[in-house]
Image (cartoon, rainbow, N blue to C red; front, side, top):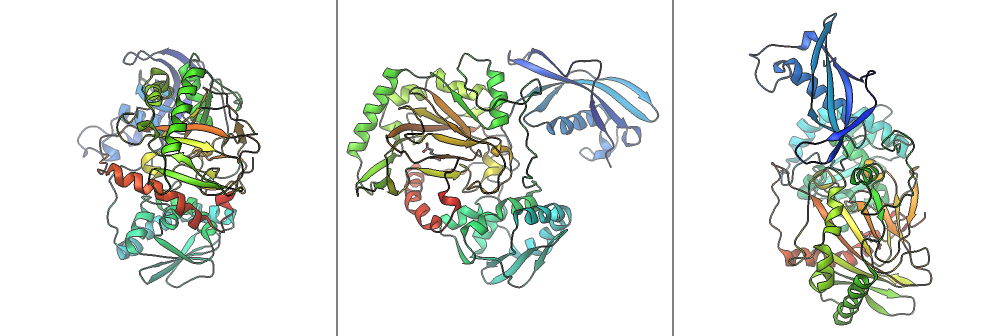
Length: 513
Ligand SMILES: O=C(O)CCC(=O)C(=O)O
C-alpha cells in the first residue's frame, strides 16, 4: 500500500506567486513536503508502469499530484524542486508545485464506449464494483431514501437493492422503481453515454413502476457504484477564496479583473457574472437581428422552439443556430472579449467557428408561457448524459436586455458542478441558490454541470443569447463525426420531448430560489 504523505511546508507561506515560464501567466505555488516510505522505493528493473517500478522522485510526484488534487479546483502540474532528506526509513522531499484552477472533471474519453455485453457486465464487471464501491453507494442511497431499482434489459431482469452496507443484486424484480430498456440503452447508461433522464427523454426507456424522478434520483448512486464518484453528502462542499477565507458568492467581475481571481471563483462556485462586456449599441444590433429571425421563423421549421402564452399565442421562444442569422452576433462571438472566458482557468477550451454550424441560440422569454420551453427549470446542461466525457464546458449568456426578477433572470446553485447529485431539481440540496441579475451587455458564464434555471418572467420580456465553449479534445479523445443537420433536428425535437418526459415530474418543473 502507498504510505506516502504530503504536508504543507511550515517554512514557506501557504501559497506564493510567480510566473509560468511557458505561458507567461501568473501562477501560484504550493510548497510542501512529501514523505515516501523507503520500503516502497525500488531501483530500476521492475516493469514500467507497475507501482514498484517507481523511482522515489517519480513516486513523490505522483503522491503530490494525488494529494494536491484533493484540494478542490487545484491541480499540480509542475514539480519545481525536490531535495532529499531521510530519517527512519522515510525519504522526504521538499517540493513546490504550480497550482491552477480547473473545471476539467473528465474521467472518460470521447469515443471510448463499447458495446457492453450484459452478461459479462453482470457476471464479471459488476461484482468487483459492488465490492469496491457498494458500501459508499449504499450509504448515499440511504441518505437519498432510494427504493430498489429494477432494470428489465430485453427481458433480463435484475434489481439493485440498497442494504445498510452494500448494494445487493437480485435476479428478480423489486418493489421500487422499474425501468424497461434494450441492451444498447443499458450499455449507454452504464458507460455514461446517456443518463437516467436522457434515456427517458429520448424514448429509449419505459418506466413501468415509479416515475422519472425516482429513476433520476438513482443517477448519482449509479455513478458512485459504476465510476467510484461518490454521491454528494450535505455539507461536504465549501467555498474558499485564494487566501482560504470564505468566498463571497455574490461577486461580479469585469474583464479588467485578474483572470486568475476570476478563474478561481469560477472553479469554486461554477458560475460568473461579468459586467459591461458588450455595449448598448452592440446589444441593440443583435436585438434587431433577433427580431428579424423571429419574424422569419415558422412552426416546425426544425430551427426554432415554440412556446404558447396564456393568451393562446404561439411564438418562437428560441432560435437555434442564431449565429448564422445574426452578423452582429458573429462579430461578438469572434471578439477577444468573448474569447476572454477561455482564459480564466488554466483549462484549454475550444470554440466552434461562429460562421459555420449552430453555436448560439437567441431566446425571447415572454410573460405567461404555459407550453413549450421558454422558462427552464433547474437542470445541469449535462443532464442528458456524458458528464464524465465533457464536463465542464462553459455556457455564456449574453444579456440583450437586463435580467431581473421581473423578467426572469438566471439562477444558479453554487458549487453544484462539484457535486454528484440528481441532474434536475434541487430537492434536499443544501448548496446556496442564487439569482444572477444582469444589465444589458453583461454576460453570465456557467459550467455545464452547474445546476441552473430561469424563472418565469412576471411583468416584462427578456432576451438573451447563449453560446458555449468546450474543453479541448485530449490525446485519446475520438469524437464521432456528427452531421450538422441531424444535430439541429435532434436539438429542435427536444422542445417536444421535454414535455413528454417531464410530465408528472416535480424535478422538471422546479424554479424555486
Ligand atoms: O433561459 C435561460 O436563461 C436559461 C436557459 C438554459 O438554461 C438552457 O438553455 O439550458
